[in-house]
Image 1: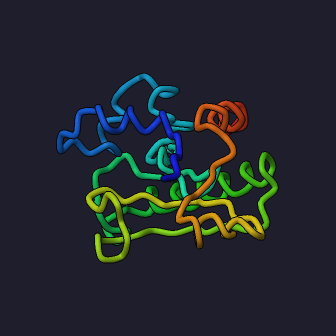
Image 2: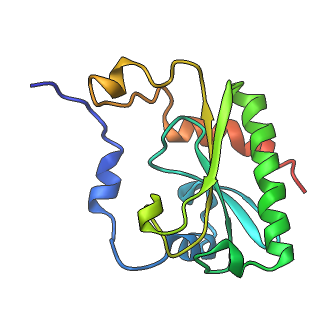
Length: 161
């Protein structure tokens, strides 16, 4: 039997699994580092995905609790797009990925892990990041801890206005 150690997952196992919307409750807290919030705009914020597909996987979400892009007003939609652009630029600066997956998953059937509050995923991609480990070993290797990613990205997001 093979063992893959992921001690940071214990936080998920023991956390309160209430029906709170994390995209509403986390921004209400002032503990941005604990909640891995990198930036707060006027209508949207940038937060790290704590179960990332790749290192640097971050999300842009409106503060407004809404499950569909059609329910955003022009100001929210513009800031969602502008912050997504900033995320691509800053992630490129820090990680130099070969490309990105960017997208919204609207509804459970579309792959949304949390479908009640809109959030845009920005996932850095590198040639070869889908190698034998996830295909044969059914295991994804993340070479950087979430805290390391947060510490690298936060200074860049602090320069946004």
